[in-house]
Image 1: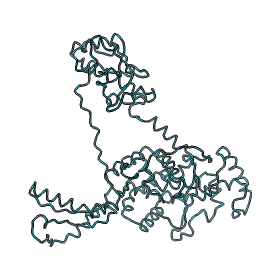
Image 2: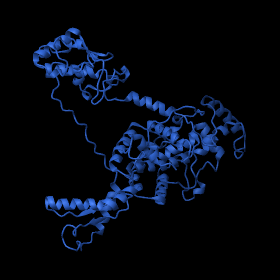
Image 3: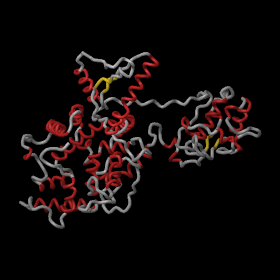
Length: 526
C-alpha cells in the first residue's frame, strides 16, 4: 500500500480532465466527515474520552471505541451483548436501501458506528506525536496542511476515494492522483476551527521531527554520544556533573532510565549506585509523558515587527480613497496637515512612497519597502515625479529643503505612480490585477478569495481513474426521477425484499454506493 509520505508530495499535481463520472468528491463529503455525522452533544460526550484512547493499542482501542459507541448511541434499544442482532445492511438490505433512497442517508447504526470510529482515529492522530516525514528524499522536509490533513483524515479520504472512483487503497494506477483530489476536498470542507487545528498540528509535527523508527536508530547510534558531550561540556565550562533522566515519546522503544557518565567524567571505575527505589517515580514520569505528549498548544513565535528608522507621520494619515481601484496614489492638500508637513517631511515622504509602491502589489504597505536602489537606477518610478536637479533614490536621506521641494512637486502633479513594484531580492515586476492587490480584500480576510477559489476547485474535482468494478451512476439531474420510480415500484412489490436489484432498475446504479460504504458487522475495527 502506498505510504502517507507519498501523499504529501506536490500539493496540486492533478488536473480535472477526462472524467466520465458525474459524481464529484464534494458531493460525497458530508457522508464521510465525522463532524457531519455526530451531533454537538455526542461530540461533547466523546471528547473527554480521547485521552484514554491515546494510550491504548490494537484490540484495546477496538473495545474502547465500541464502549464509547454504546454510550452515545441514541437510536432504538439494542442488545449490545449479541452483535449478531445489531442492525446491518446485510440483515435487511431492502429496508436499508429504501431508507437511503427516501432520506438520502445510510443506515443510522452503521454510519454512526463509522463516524465514532473515525472520530477517535482523527482525535487520536491530532493528539499523537507519532509522525512521519512527508515527501521524498531530502528536498521536502516540512509537513504542509494538506499533508497533515491526509494523515489525520486518511481513513475518511480512503473511503471517499473508494466510493467515488471505485479504487481501493494501494491501487497501482491512479490511487495517488485520486487520493490527492479527495484529500483537497476533505480539507476545504473542514470548518474554520478544524482547519486551524490542522494548521497548528502542522507546525507541531514540523517541530516533532523524524519517523519513530529512525528516532530509535538515531538514539542508539548518536544520542548517548551527544549527551556525553553535553555532560563533558558542562563539567569543563560550569563545573557541574550532569546526569540524564530520559523518557521516550509514545511509540519509541527506549527504556525510561537514568544515564550515568561517571566513568567518563573521571569519577572512577564505578557507576553511581542508587539505593533509593525510584521505579515508581520512573513509571509515573513515563505515564505523565505518554499521557500529555501532544496535548500542549504549539508555541509559535510572534511575527517580528520590522524596525523602522521612521515613525508614523503626524501630518499625514493615508486614506483608502487615495489608492483603491487605481494605479497611483492621489496627493492633494486635503490628505495632509499642511501646517506640520515641513517638520514631519521625512515621515510623510516615506509613507507616500511606501503606499504608492505597495498599491500595485499584493503586499500590504507594512510588508514591503520602497525599492530605493531600483529608483536610483531609474526603475519603478518615472523621472518626472522628481523635481529638476533632484537625484532619485532614498528620499528620506535628502535635506529638509529638498524634501519639501519634492513634496510640493508631487502636490502639483497630483499623484505618484509606480509602474513596477519590487520585492526584496527579486527583480521588479509589473502591477498585479486589481483583484490581487492588498486592498482588494478587507482586513482580517487576507487570502479569502484564493481560498474560495481553491475550495471550489477541490469540491468540483471528479475522478479520472476508476476501479474495475465501478459502475458510473446516472447523471445527477436524472437522480430524482429514478428515485421516484424506484420508490413507487419498490413499495408496490410486497415480499420482494430478498429479490435484490433488478436489471435496468435504478437500484443497480446505486448498488456501488451502498456496498462501498458498508461497515463490517459484527464488531468495529479501530
